[in-house]
Length: 167
Image (cartoon, rainbow, N blue to C red):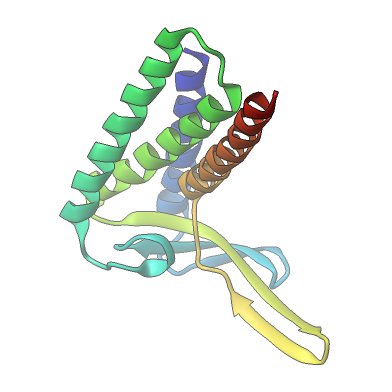
């Protein structure tokens, strides 16, 4: 149950932060947090990561429902097995919370509220870098960290399996 609580915390933080952005900021309004580097920027995204597949609301709703069901099924199955997989389960929890957070937005309004904006402007080895990373939200952070933990778990599990085979 601890892992479902972690997913719920991601959902609550995500939805509360999005609510604040929607209710206290105008669309496209920016509030500087760290100069030009980091800002809270009220933005809406009708697509997926990096703005791809714009206006495919029902596609995302169906796919997300399948993903959410699969994650919950796998988490319950893993919990019932009695085996401890904390890295795997933490990754799945964050992924689940992030998926549900953005799903709520898409279901309610057809668009996801994004607001974390990072702008990189510097010179490196004589090259001028001027890049704005795609605007994102707390749910996206859960998805990315969760996916990273799943990859780490797979890599560590693979390494562990190789050690067992050679022993």
